[in-house]
Image 1 (spheres, rainbow, N blue to C red):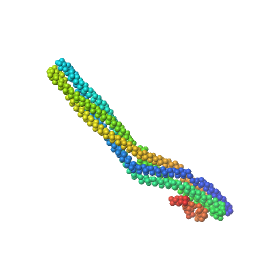
Image 2: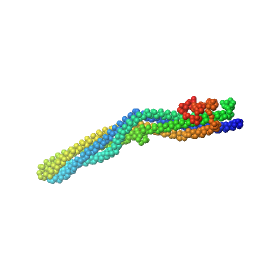
Image 3: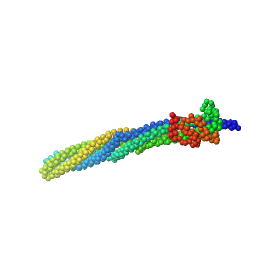
Image 4: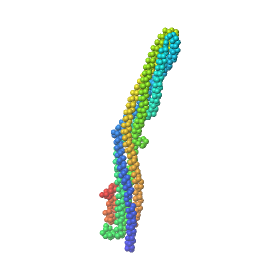
Length: 593
């Protein structure tokens, strides 16, 4: 009977050991390291570290640039350009007003000149009457032909002078209208926009100062974030060792299970030869204890693996958040309101637009300068013609006086011609008065033209200097803007790249779930085999020395020794304590050193 029981026990032991071999092979396949997934993630982490570190350095450099001499120079350039633009804008209104005054002064010359033309036409009519009455007087032997011819000559000279002056004033009025049209058009459009740019630049100055202050306060946080990124990446890379550690621990389990073959056929000269003297019952207790012990080793290894992977994923998520935060802060500190280019680019665009408007102003100012030159030439010519008219007036008065004296001696026969001569003298006095009015109007218009010329000359120089300053400011600010825009673009590219790399690397990184499921199945089967080997259970104290003798020299990790100590003390085999950081550190030390 004992022999039969012994044969049955031996047969059962062989079956259990055969099942352990099958389970061991499955564990080897399940625990084989997923090198591809971990290498891909490692490459992604290394790239993320270099990319985010470089991005943080760029961010820091950009912040320092804005807070340093470049930022001071940009602020000074904007302030200077703003003052000049507002000054030019205000001056354009004053020039437009002066142009209107000049137009009025020119009109003041044209009006008396028209009156003078009427007087000259009256002289022409008097010349005709003089010819008629002179023909009657000639019958008495007195010749007034020279008098009448001189009236015609002088009247023709005066008429030509008036027509020439009127023509010049007409051309001047046309030029004045064109200049005023250009000035009004500039005032309605470009001048308004120029002033708006100047006013906007005041807000931009305040924004630049505010952003520089914000950047100054943000620098310490940027440095902290750079350090945090480095720490997270280092922790993540360290966490990748869990794959090799877990595989090694499973190899230890496989080695322990493989030792169980010695229970069936112990061989002399091997580490299991001492099993030869044990009875089958003792062997089954050892087998059941080893199964329970290795089941706990696998559960603990999976638990440590799962915890490490969860922490790893948490760090990866945090890294993605850090990348987004860097980009968000960069866009907040340096980006424009439209979310595209930097806010400095907006300033540069305004300054460049101001340069175009100033060019338009210079073109309009050039028309004014040409007009002023034309006004001076026309008024000089009219003044010269007025001088000729005054000479004609003198001749008419002398001729009229002579004719009056002659007609007085003739008595009644010379009375009609004498009246004509007196009228001519009266016209001469009126032309003299009108000429004085015209001269005064010309003087006033000339003074207005000179004042406008001086103002235009001064503003032309200011505009030219401002154009040069704006060109320099544009180059400097564009240089800063290009650097800011490029850095923002680089940061955006870097952050997108980090997010993409980490996302692709972790998208299918669910090894803990598959390992938990697979090891869970193997643990249940291993537990069943242990129960099959010893249905009534095992007192750990009875097999402690045997287990230590078999497996003690195979323990290379503190976690394995902890499980063994728990088993040896008789604690529950189904609830191992969770791994701690200290345990994990010890594992790493024991494994690598």
